[in-house]
Image (cartoon, rainbow, N blue to C red; front, top):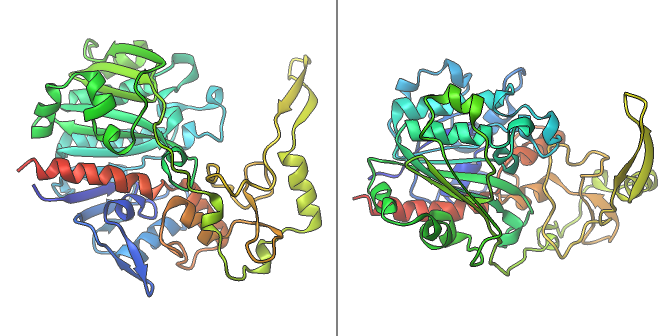
Length: 412
């Protein structure tokens, strides 16, 4: 079976970078892996500027990438492929919003799941790898687990079994504490599907599954839930009635859900100090005294009296954060607002001067595992920060990709 790839919601190419072990040499992209990307789609709605698409074209060429609303694409025209990947947009249940105000799969961008579902129905790729925020498993607040249940039901209707894991990259020796849900699906036509049918759910989660081999977990679990999406009449009934807890590790076999709460079993730490630029950094990244004062307040612990809309008083509380950031730990999760004067922005001690400054765009690329200057394609610093706040951790995809290649090699 050929290692061919289609990438939806491609962004600046994180999946492709991870799967193909991409490097930049003299500003030229070198793909060292075995995957042939046949087609990719990247389109940002409600804006004329398409910086992510432009970056993708700059790094991979324009021949096989498409800049059209995915709903306007005739899915029959997408080339047949072995692996479908996508970091489908997650703004509607982002960690930057509270769960109670998120819109989940009904939100404007959450609806883009149905572009993936249509592709599954029409193209039936043997394997699928998707990435989303960890909150996907919980949304919406009023019907916990419904959104993920609908996604699992969609896979079930299209002939797939599914394994998922919420992975905190920083817990597995990567430079950022970024928690994301990774979903691996395999079609009933594959040898792998038949093989996994013979293995019980617990062994898939702890030993035999795709995630267990690269992201080991401690033996035993804290919580477990079993459920089923096969007994519902259709997706509408799932939408109306399905409710379930989902934990960070799980599998769906023939519509039956097995989900457990597990802990990582890994000891290596990638410290933030290892990504710092060691040469002279531009003065624009350094903080003024007034900015340091603002950050000190924002990152400090506080208890502030406030009043609810109904007039009831309450106290808003938040704990203190390390300031500056701890150089001996991985970076915290980067958000699209990185570099703004906010509580979530990283502030580090400069390698040469020991003064406090923001991360540079290059350091943000390193935190996500991209080659240096990957987004240095003419876009502003602000946009480069935004792209990295939206991106995935390339190293996670590299490790999952190794296992997918092994699986495909056995399909022969």
